[in-house]
Image (cartoon, rainbow, N blue to C red):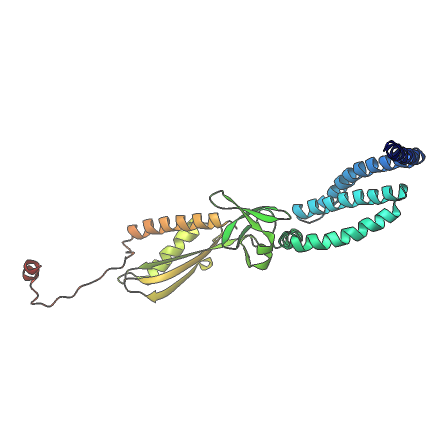
Length: 295
C-alpha cells in the first residue's frame, strides 16, 4: 500500500514538475499575452470613443451610434483574444473553441429565438429613419413620445407620463403611425347646429374663430368646413384645420380650445347647439288625469 502511495506521489510530482517547466519555458509568451490582453481592453475603450465621435457627424440615430460603437469595442477584444491564443501556441484549442462555439451558438439561437428577434428588430429600428427619438407615434394600441430604442424594446412616454416598453419585434411587425413626420397636425372636430340656424353665417363665424386664434391658419380658405348631414336633432358639420405641432397632446389641447371658443361665439350670436330630444304626440282627447288615476 505504501509503495502505491509513493508511486502515485512520484507521478504527481513529475507531472507538476513538467507543468512548472512548461510555465517557465512559456513565461515570456504568458507575459506577452497578458500585455496584449491589457492593450486590447484599453484599445477597445479608446477606439469605441473614437467611433462615437466619427458617428456623431453622421445622421444615424443615437441608438444606432451606440450599437455600432459597442460592436467595434467587442470586435477589438475578440481580435486580442485570438492573438493571445496564437501567442500561447493554442491553435488547436482555437479550432476546438470555434467548433464548440458553432454548436453552442445553434443551441442558444434556438433557445433565444424571441430575444434574438427583438435584437434584430432593434437594429432595424435604430437604422431606419421612420422612427427617431422625440417622435410621437402610435403602435400596438399605445401612443406616446419615443424616448429610447435599444436591443430589446422601444420605450415611449404617454400623455399621462407613464412609460411603455414595447418589444422591438412587435413594433416592426405591426403598423406604426408617426405624427412627427410632418411639421403640422390636423385638428378634426364635429359639431351640429339647430335647424333654425343660418348655415352660411354659422360657417363664416366658425372660420373667423379659427383664423383669429390659431397662427397656422392665415385665411378662411385654410379652414375646411363641411356640412355632413341632416341629423335627428341638428344639422351636423365637420371642421378641419392645421396647427404648428406634431404632438397628439397639442392636437387635443387645440381641439379643446376650439370647443370653448365656438361655444362662446355661438352663445353670443344665439346659435343653438341642440342635444337629442324626443317629441311625444298625444291624441287631442287624451286624458292625463285618467291615466294618472289608473296608475
